[in-house]
Length: 416
Image (cartoon, rainbow, N blue to C red; front, side, top):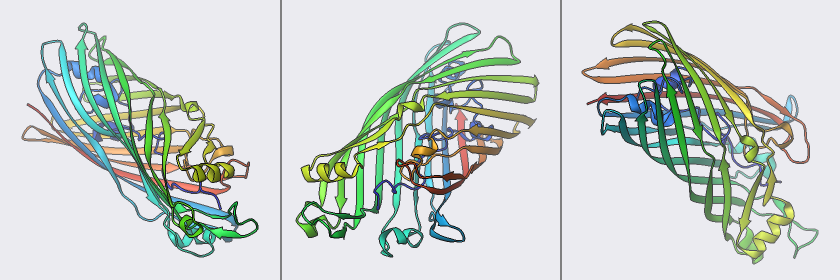
């Protein structure tokens, strides 16, 4: 058995990333780069904060509910017919903005721009371990701390910048597999449960520009720099001590989030109707290999000989397209809808359960109201992942992969 059959539902909607933050933006399909006029602007386009004339604070919470399937073998009697256990992954954004002059606004946000997790049903994957029920669990997340400054350069052009200090957490439990140890040739042994607990820091920046030639349309551009999180932690192989081998090892792994460039246009064809379109390019070819450094010499030699310390990913650059609309029924009530097309960055030849990715068609709905000065936004995303039928290439996990996700979210904000 192989260690890379490990992290169920690990990849987010846009590769390793989530589709975005803020209920209003998400219920518009994430087409928000040229809108960027509420508390979530720190994520979408920091330049939008330059228009704030009074202090603004906001909170967004979402609940990501994935449902993944994996089948291997000949139907209807599959060797593997597995489903993920019910899971909920919470995340969101909290931010505050303070104008310090008529043209300069500062702010700060804490957010989860990347996060995913899941757990496989142990019975479904038991054939991999001879019927033994091992844990198959994983989660990964990034928490970003982002100070912001936005400047109104002229009545038409604004610019903004955030510095993003990112803390990443990764947890995993899976089967270690059955192998022949070097000191016991010809005798396959079950190495039991394999686990990882890791954390680390990385940093990047987000630059935004907003151009508003008139009150009926505007243009936006956002650039998110790549950042690398240097994970450090501990690995555990539960049955190694049975063969006089250390059951734990310190370990390190670097994972790089890509350069993303997004451009958008927002149009108000009539006073109550907003229509927006975004295009985002992500430099996923940065993720060429997934390399792990085991500090224990035996671990390094053993897992290195099996090839699990250097896994080929060969992800490809992709373009995401987002559409959204908002219609104001009254000054205090608005309806929203949107759509996002997000192609999978991983090719068939390296598709695996360590970092699965899917082509998503995402449909969104939302509503908002204002109560005593408090703005309340609610949104719902349904993400339909295109099933992937994978043939064995030598670098992947063959089989049929499927994914669906539901993401309810709510936001509350207040302008002081």
